[in-house]
Length: 236
Image (cartoon, rainbow, N blue to C red; front, side):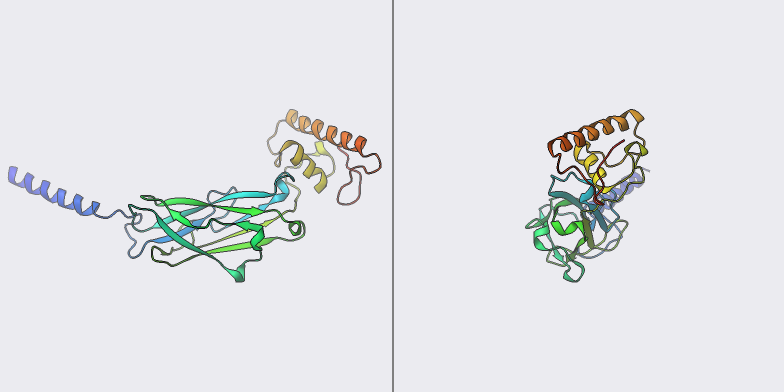
């Protein structure tokens, strides 16, 4: 019995040692480590894409920093590893002055997940059009293109514009909707969604924007606030 126990213990040690000789994110994956991208760190983004509107961002803010998620399939490494992304020209309409990417892309030592910053910029043409940036993993000495797995893909697309759309949660407290009125609310209070807000909060917002319009019109009696349709801006 003791001999049998010893043999089983030796076998268990051999299995455990063999299992620890390689750290792998996906035991079913064979071959070179691969990179996948996703919008999991960007609010309301889909797996392989994100749509951003500067219209719901205060007008004074001229850029927005996004975090693109990165996941490795394959072996974990003891040192930092770089990976390569390229812009897909045929699927990109954004100009180089409308976004900023890091000079290098790095997976830190011992990590299977990381992220990199992507800064998108607010340009004048975004008022009338949307622009698109499509990034694609390019095979290099460290990584190949990852498989489509869950929300991760070897390609990632960001679309952005500077247009407002009437939110489904627009409250009658603010009167008839206009883009100009929505922009004033955003700039003066930061609110972009009115769902589930208590009535007292809605009326607090109303007081703030009413005061803003009053002050503006007093300071510009010959050029009072008008909306995109030429109507005077008025909150009830």
